[in-house]
Length: 489
Ligand code: ADP
Image (cartoon, rainbow, N blue to C red; front, side, top):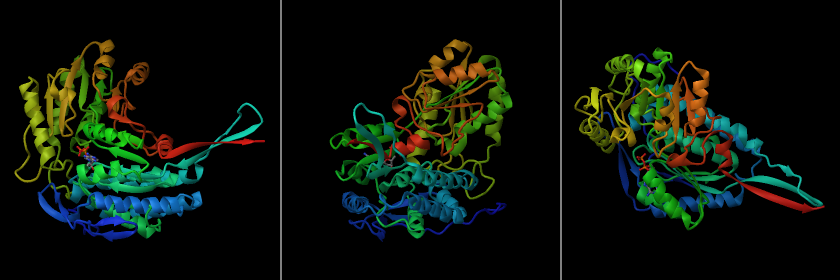
């Protein structure tokens, strides 16, 4: 990738239509919707607005491709090779894709270049390596029988993704589905359809057969709901809000579709007094403010042991003062705008709740500038467990700091939430760290680090943060059915 010294140029927008059965087509209704650049609020593209008819076409294409077996029964190593080819094409276009992500989502170009797109490539390569390693077992059952299992692709999968990491969420969902031999109908988030459409074009160029990946942009209650209800879809993989997941779970019950969910969080980040405070302060800042606070695993409940509380707050306030907000195409920018007006309004509403509930706003709390959806990095102290800013997912740059003195209480307080996506602990005491890691009810626990992701490491939620796991071998298993074959000898 080129090193960045000056403002990065805006990329061209090339794909805005539905991608169905290898063809780029307008929506059946002819309708389009606008996508905007959140830093300027200007319209950057009109994108095909898919609905039930388009979903029907896409599911037909995915079904025909799956049942025809051109992909699902392709030699596994060749499937892997095509996935590697897709990763190579994305790598060759990484700078442009990063710029497209920044344009559509508003995230700083330094993040989309250093994090989003490299992680996309890594995820696709990781799962490309799995394609020819999906194996069953031989099982010693009673009697004169030979019993074995096969791991078969689950079939046609509907994948519904959010707007916070648009390209990466597509890769997390395509990787295991493609490796397993499934075919895909993806509905990207209405706020950010562009990188997913570009990646579909690159999949086509890589030689992944028509109908394997289909993309229908559109809204959740129309296109998304049609995908969930479609009888030709075998599984829904969804990342988004808990409330939406509950609707999907109800809708999918009739057809008994397989479901995996990756939902929200209110992740506890616990700093003990014996921690390396430099690392803990930097880690707590990153844990919450990265990606404008728009991370499902954001460390949004920061618990700090009382003897180091004030020192830590000073450091956090300093970091917030120095945080560079502005044009996301400027390589020096550290924080861009929230993704849209609705998110911007929600974040500022929670700032009001924090104040109304009696917390102290010691940093930020306002809009930044007068154009775009920028919110100052905001920090609340004197937060108590029952306040709305300590309970609800805000999905923005608002950090709630809670004090603790009783070490034995901290696990109970950390677990005092319906969510269970992630948690972190900062301490030099290895026993304390492992005790916390074993007792906290969360799918991922980071010790003396935060947001360390790897395609090989499973990710997902306890409690109402999700169902099933993505990434790693567990993520792959969620795209297979286990078949038992028993042969009389
Ligand atoms: P977020 O707050 O991240 O936008 P949502 O759950 O609203 O969370 O959106 C995540 C994804 O789910 C988006 O692609 C959205 O269009 C889709 N979606 C929203 N409502 C529904 C629904 N009723 N059925 C299916 N998909 C939906």
